[in-house]
Every structure is written in structure tokens, then in C-alpha cells.
Image 1: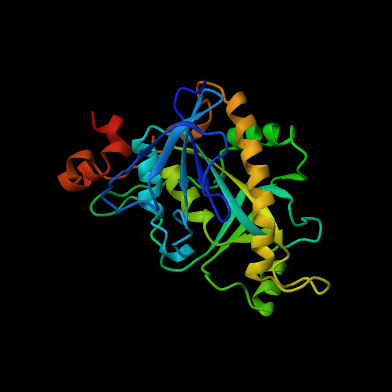
Image 2: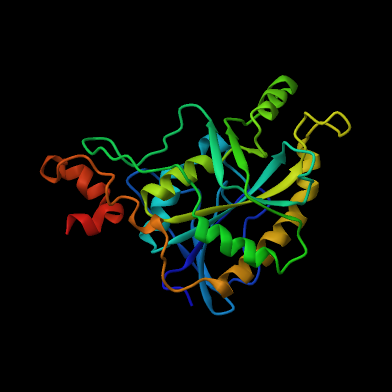
Length: 287
């Protein structure tokens, strides 16, 4: 059993975890505002898991309205050390078909004006994001996915756009020229903030469509996406269940020490209010 619970962020179509027992709701208040919803803490096959619906139950939040800082801060205060994000994405390559599962290892941030750091207000820190996904956790997700019947692609680049509109045809062709693999609207802020919080992060990108670049496929519509979400959600739940069974107790990846050489501000110069606000993230360094 893992030393700390696994966290799961459910995207479009995944608003709860099948098999989650002993459920209790955890309402977390953060200095950055309210998370998307209450966290659902429970167990699957006896192993702890904490689940959060990214868009809120009932899908109430646009991608640009999600309070990513509050979401990740909440997971941190609840003791989560590993975080898996389940997300609906569009495919930017012929070989990545609807209902495939992609485990990206890189991100491109094409969003605008979204808060994506915990720092500032008198505290300067720069974490490394060269490898934004925890390779150890991604390998464990791949191992769990291999036990299912999904078509799995290990590695790739996720382009995160602002939305909420889908791409124009010209934009879709431009993004294709970048060589990216999938396109979505949410994950890059999560990856950045998880690294600052020293939480291992991996994305399970569930392909629903070909965006609008594919000349032989119908242009992406909400109806097309929704039609595939239920099956994708079932795949994600099966993978998470198997992942819980193979999680080691301790972490040996660099994520756990991501802040070891990242903070530049002298401790005595950090404002007391900033120090208190970030205590869950920097607590062991303040002691």
C-alpha cells in the first residue's frame, strides 16, 4: 500500500471513480480560493485514493475558469504524493485514433493569462520543468494500462490551448506543424503546479477525436466527444485500479526534491504572510 494516497483528477466524462469505497468528502479551503469541488477520499481494493472532478460535478467550469492552484494545493494538504490526470484530448496524428490512450511526456503551453505558479509576493523560486511528467509514475501507469485492452502510446507532446472553443482549421494545421501528438485545454497548469508542490504528475490522455485537421473525418463536435467519453472513462478507471496495485511505498524520483535548489529568496526576506500561505508546500524548509 502506498505511504500516501494516490490523487486522481477526473476530466470530461470522469466525475467519480468506480469501486471507490469508504467515501468521505473533504472540503478544502485554500489561500488561492476554492478547488473545483469537494475531494472524494476513499479506498479501491483497500488502497487509498483521493479523487477530484476537474470541472466540478455536473461539469460547471470552463477550462479557463478552473482554479488550478487551489486544486493542486488541496491535494498537497491532503497528503497526496502522486497525481494522475485523466483528460479528454484531440489527436493530432493519424496513428492516434479515438479511444487510444496517450501518456504524454512533454507539454507546450499555448494558454493565456492563467496563474500557473504558487510563488511571488516576496518569494522567488524556479523549478526545473525540462521533464514535466514524472517518468517513474508514467512508467507505472503504462504498466497498469498494459493489463487492459486499450491501445496505448507511451510518450508524446500535449499542446494546451486556451479554449473553450475548439481550434479553427487554420489553427489545427498550425499545431500539426509543431509535431505535437494531442491537444487539450487543461493539463499544463496542473503539471507546472504539481512540480512546484513536489507531487509526481502524469497524464492519461484519452483520445476522443481528430480535432478538425483530418480531411476524411468529421469536424470535432461536442456530440462526437461526448459519445466517446463514457468508454474512455471506463478505460481510465480500470487503469487506475491496476495502478494502485503496483505503486511502491516510497518515491525515488526527483519530484520529491524539486524545490531543493529552486528557492532564491533569502529565508529572512520572505514575508510572513507568504511564508504562512505556502507552509504546506515549503513547510519542511521552514522548520
